[in-house]
Image 1 (cartoon, rainbow, N blue to C red):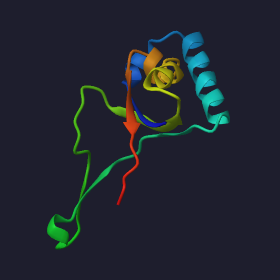
Image 2: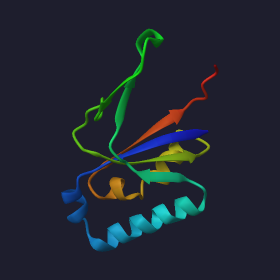
Image 3: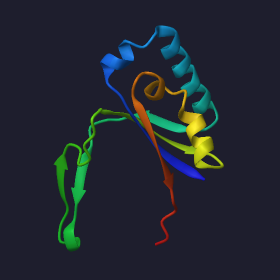
Image 4: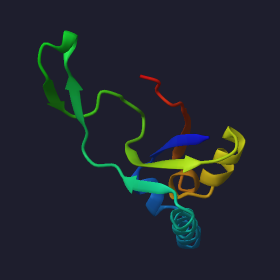
Length: 110
């Protein structure tokens, strides 16, 4: 199964986390990347609309709002949501007072 993960976190919370915990979290991310996990830091989003296929419009900024800023994304493969949770539990957002969402990615049948 594939999962999309979204990490949220404030820089101040990251900074107040012990350096050893942060270092291990980054090492954890490096191990995940070595296993083929695609991950990256979130850039600035663009909203795209094309109502009724009448013309595309864009708007800078996020449509989705959260209490914490989005820090990054990953696409992971795991046997279950529980395995996916175990995989992300050691990442920087999870250990540095943020949160990681795990979303099952279902194949779109077009």
